[in-house]
Image (cartoon, rainbow, N blue to C red):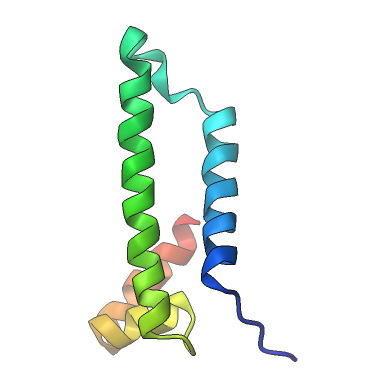
Length: 90
């Protein structure tokens, strides 16, 4: 099996398309009323911050998967539990 790597721009494109698809399907701003633009702006800024966290971790551990470097950061047992919760959530 071939080990595939994605670049930073590919990671950004995947996350952007995911966020865009979710924003089109789920209507976040209905409870906000006329301030829906503000809730969208806050959600977008937190998504961009999350992207930069993922990108930083991706650059620090280029040879590991996400669950791999979670185990590397948090230790064997706690990292395994966090990785399991992450995989179970998504």
